[in-house]
Every structure is written in C-alpha cells, then in structure tokens.
Image (cartoon, rainbow, N blue to C red; front, side, top):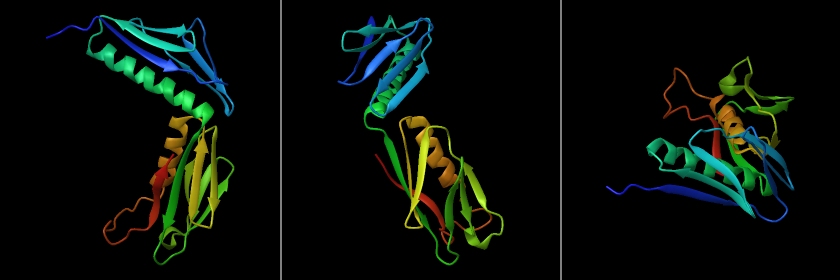
Length: 180
C-alpha cells in the first residue's frame, strides 16, 4: 500500500473576491453579494494564503485528515460560489382537495389549511436567507450561505410531512423541484 506524503487542495479566488485568514483560524471571504466567515481549526491541517487563492495542506495524512482536508476544500469553494453567484432552491406546494395558503411572516414560514387543519404549520427561516412565495404555490429560497439556504428549504419541506396516513395516497405537501 502506497503512503501519500502530502495532500494539497487549491481554492482559486476569482476577480472581485477577497479572502483573508485571521490568526485564530477564521476565514472571511467577501464578494459582490456579501461576505461569509467560517472557522477552520485543526492541529494537523494547514490553511495558507497562496497568491490568487487559498491552499489546504496536510502532511502525512491519515484517513480522517484526508477527509477533513477535502471537507475544508468543499466548504471554501461553496463560500466562494456563494459570494459570487449565490444559491437558490425552488420548491412547489402540491395539494388535491384543501388549498394551502403559504406566507412569510418575519422569520417564519407559515402553511395554512394543510389537509384542512385549523392550526397553521410553521418553519424557521435561518438568518441571511430570503424566502419568496409567487403564484400562490411556488417558493424560492435564496441566499449566499449554502448550509443556511439548504436547511431553510429542508425546514419548509419538512413542515408538511404526512403523519398517520398512507404516503402513496396522501401526496399533498411542499417538495423541492430544483436547486441552483
């Protein structure tokens, strides 16, 4: 079995985007859509500023360090993509008999009249995420932080789970159609 002596991942920073690493391991990436910060701390993995990009490096990696270096690389690439393009999820509400009404109230997404229920179902909207309802059934979740956007879309989708009924028959709910 061959032992790998060094793993290096290079994260390229495009024009108009700046990246800075503080002494305590916090990486801040700023771009045209905003700025994101995240903490990267490990005793075995180094994060270095390299000319026009960032370098994730580990020497004599074991399996866990190799995996963590790849995870850091993915997080940094997602941060760069978030501040340049952003992330968008498209969801749609489907119903057969009882028409649902969808609304955004402050930091909460509200679903009224789900299966004719009197009590509205609610889900949290995480900070930095913009949720819009159009055409009464189409929902757009967008923002620059991939984790917050994805978790908000999952919260909205999970708020309409069917309980004590056959999923094959009662297919009403909110489902993700696409993500960009």
